[in-house]
Length: 92
Image 1 (cartoon, rainbow, N blue to C red):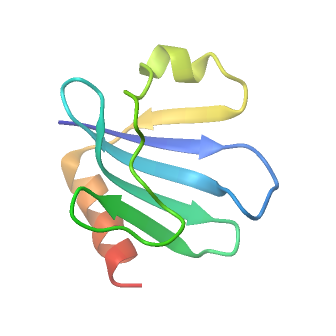
Image 2: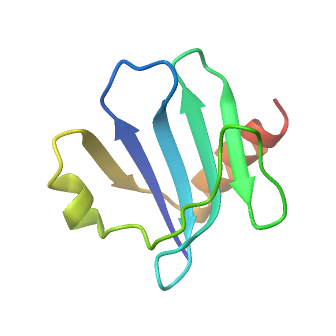
Image 3: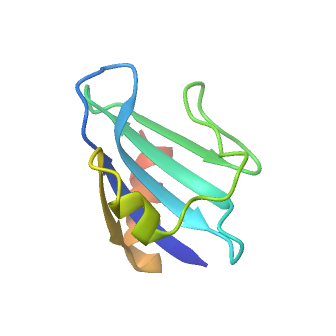
């Protein structure tokens, strides 16, 4: 598994500004946490999801591709860092 954090630089309150993803080896999301501008959390997994958050249907681009888009700031996470944000999201 790979874990990433993407900061989406925008000001639309309807879209998340932080996206945390757990990715399979073929880069499909297996779990995701989204944080919205009002500090609302959304989450999704193969078993459950909140109303605003769903797993992507296509593989997530590579870090290099994401970093090439000026709307995104991207960083790798550890499994532990992802688990911390996952627990925060599902307990909101």
